[in-house]
Every structure is written in structure tokens, then in C-alpha cells.
Length: 250
Image (cartoon, rainbow, N blue to C red; front, top):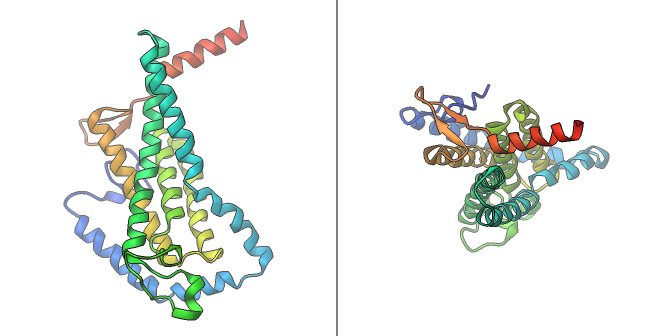
């Protein structure tokens, strides 16, 4: 379904993006008619059925991704400055690049999602009985009016693509987890389906934007003559791993 080496997902390019935008807008419009029904139906499920979603939804928290990658980036950057030229220094550079990529590709879409939350100011499902599903308090609002788009869904999809760009064989697993995270946001009563779809779009496009920027700089990724984007690999870390395995077997 996804060729992760292409610059953009699902055949999107600079020429056809208006058509894709129209499809997104029409899809969101159609979903508006089932937003309340899906939300209320999932919230009304028996507690024993909803319980797993309260666990799954935590995958969409950005802290467990951003904090470790920021720490790894700082440590690797300091190590790079302190080490003499050689294999270890190149390995520190690769760790710094990986940590920086993950941090930006997950954090940047998350920041955009949070700004959009405040801009749209949509009331969350918890307010449905009082104000309905289409009450808005734009810009100046608190978390109860920050429903669209879903931040957890943004983080989960962005991270799935980040993993897929570097390790495609794991993409299917993380994409499934990401989609289930989005569904969980409806089941726990924090978002409507349109919020989740919006988060999926922001997370996906944000991850691609950061990956493509890295490719233009030849950081971790490179643009190929046929217009694709390939992961350049981690030769220094791979060599260190092989050396460690050889010593362990000796």
C-alpha cells in the first residue's frame, strides 16, 4: 500500500495535490455525519471492552519518544565533539542523526497539531451533552476545546512512518499500532473520528516533510536519480555491532 521510498504517500505529488486536498475535505465532511454516532457508540461500549483502549491510547503520548531522543541527541553530540576522528566518532554522529530525525519527525507534526487544536478550538466529546459536537472556541481555549486534530493520532502515525523509513519490515506493525491508537482516542471519549483522521494526516505529512528535508541535506537519507528517497544506513554502528559480536563469540 505504501512505497516508503517515494517522496510522498499514495502517489501524492506537486501536480495532483489539489485533488488530494479535495478528497480529504470531502472525506472529513462525510465523516461529520457519523462523528457523533461513532463517538457515542464507542463510549457506550461495556467497560470491559473499552479497557484495552485505555492502555493502547498511551502509545500516542509523545513524551516517551521525545524525551529519550532529546537526551540521546545531546549525549551523542557531546561525544562527537569529545572523540577523536575514527569509528566511535562516526558512530556518535549516526546516533545524533537518528535521534535528531526521530525527535523532529515526531515533534514537529505534534507541534503543528497543537497549534491547530488552538486555532480550531473544537469542543471534545465530553462536552457533547452541553454544547453538541460542533461548538468552537478558537485561539483562546483550554484542553476541553482542543479536539481537532488528535495529538495522540498525530504522534502515533508520525512514529509509524519514522520507523518505516528506516526499517520498512517493521512498518506494518507500527502502522497497525498507530491506527489502533487513533481508534482508542474515540473509545476513551477524547476525540471524534474526524479528529483522528485529521491527526493521521498531520502526522503522516509531517513525517514525510522532515524525511524529505533530511534527504536534501543528505542526513541519514538521500535522493536517488529516479526520484525516490533511500535510507543511507548506519555503517559505523553496523561495524561496531559486528565487532562486538565477533569479540563475544571469541
